Length: 159
Image (cartoon, rainbow, N blue to C red; front, side, top):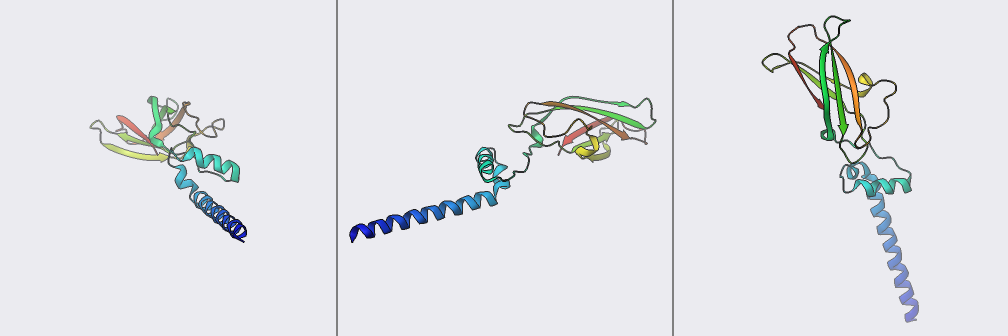
């Protein structure tokens, strides 16, 4: 009889362990996007999603986009239009979706006179899609309408 009780206890403990593991798995899957924002957790959650056939939000680390070149010039074909050229590299550990690009025009005193955020669909060409891979450098060109004639400089940021 003691052997049966011992088997029952082992079976009960194994069942409890399986239930705890299943609950932990559900908690991780339910919070996968929040956990995947952490560089330590992302590889684990990514592997788990491969097994569980779930999707993760794209890695977003806008501060990891590093400018490599920038230029602004008047469009010779259109009055009042400035063409901004930006090149930047993804220094994050993982691929990232294309960022929003915030461009601020400044006057001679460095004061902002205009600002606009561009979504990827507003500045991407048809051949630029998918994520930006780690270490990949990309270039974009954005046309801005500038009617005041007071713009003397520009600044940009990634969002």
